[in-house]
Length: 146
Image 1 (spheres, rainbow, N blue to C red):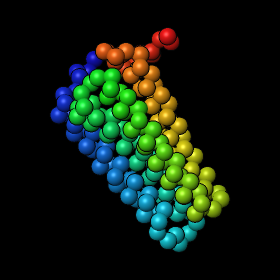
Image 2: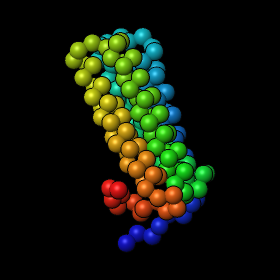
Image 3: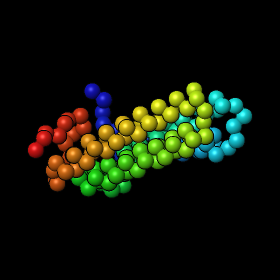
Image 4: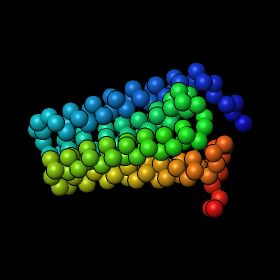
């Protein structure tokens, strides 16, 4: 069984996630706002956008508990952060769809799937935050209905 990561390792991983997210989102923004020579360059919006959303969510999930502490209020804040990241992804995907042509606009499936996964995780975190005011259940356990 692997040993738990130290806070320094978690912080380093979170910072790497945030930096990868910033680079990916900057690349997606470049393709979104810049002129396109070929219609196939629309994939330059959707693929880096999906990668950036995942990396931003992972970096946020790593860094926020270190900064705010591991408590139910933190889970609630993380749930809202994931919702915000999902909305950012949907908005950027919508703008990308407006500026792309078929069949290249089918690449929009990737960021939409990421946004749906973020909303699912946000809902799960919200349930955990509301299930107990004192203790967050361990990762991998489901919150019983009630």
